[in-house]
Amino acid sequence: MDHPFHNSPALALLEFESIAAGYLAADAMAKRAPIARVVAGTVQPGRLLVLLSGGVAEVEEAAAAGRGIAAGSLLDEVFLPAVHPGVIAGLLGERHPMADALAIVESSTGASAIAAADAGLKGADVTLLELRLSDGLAGKGVCFFTGTVSAVEIAVELASAAVSPGHFLHAVVIPQLSPEIAATLHTSSIFSQNLQK
Image (cartoon, rainbow, N blue to C red; front, side):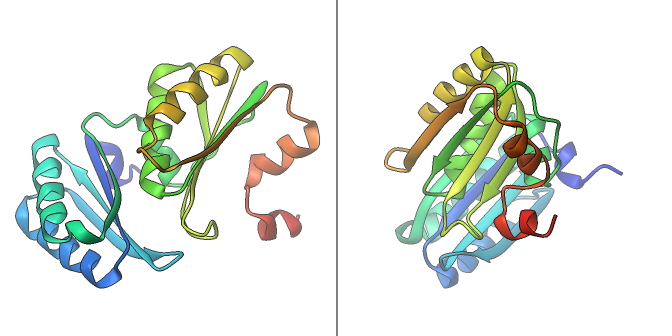
């Protein structure tokens, strides 16, 4: 069954340092324009993420309303008027098989990780292996691309450039990932989940 996010051309995520201000902004966004879906919730370390999906004009208008209400608390944001379907799949936790090489882009916010994932997928022939936002990462965002070595090199360059100014942390390309690490990442990058295998 299709998730509601799969049918929306546009996506925005606003990341707030204040939970209270973030919910005030989320309410304003939900009231401002008829968007298909609004998801708001707390993440580590005490931030609020608000994800919007729907038509391009509606999502853009709603995001502007939230930005205006709680601008002093807005840590980072991303607006994707033509979001890549792989980003939606990554947000929903869908996984794909590992290819030859792995690239990882790490940012200090979830919003920048979404921007990085979208740029990498649109600019290179890669698959998004995993996209993680904030929880269990002390607020960081991380995206994992897989594909040929040359493809992931392009993806990591484009993804790193898409990270909001001041939020880029690190990026690596690992050619010929070891079978042991590939098997671990096939399931999850979360230590406690891999420990149970």
